[in-house]
Length: 159
Image 1 (cartoon, rainbow, N blue to C red):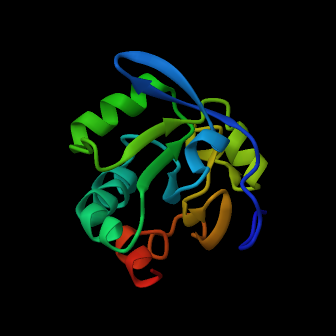
Image 2: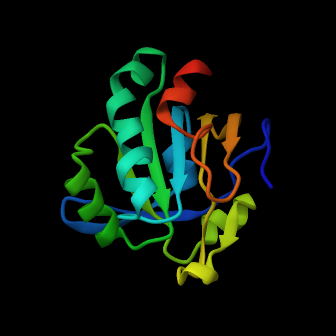
């Protein structure tokens, strides 16, 4: 599993940009920036929709005042689902949603989880981190089924 001080592995994520399913590398996402990154097991799932994504939308301005350049959410879904979820949650330009459709990024981080018992297959574990110029500065990984240390509120206390 990735840890504080490690460099984010090279991977390609997808996001919707100007109506197009666009590839974004981790190098492009993190180079020269301070990014608040969080991951959820699935778009439109109860905790992710009711608590996790909203906690970063609500705290976006405060995080940016503390030096965060951008806020990124990643999930093992496709870019079209991530766009629809972001629109339904009112993410606007506060949080950029990225798709890790094949869980390649989650696996590269060592933060993938088998959620087959819930009919979800391989997904990302719930976590948050601050990444500065590609290096992990803080890391908050939830225990399965938990939601506390990966929230936007908790991240504010770490900056």
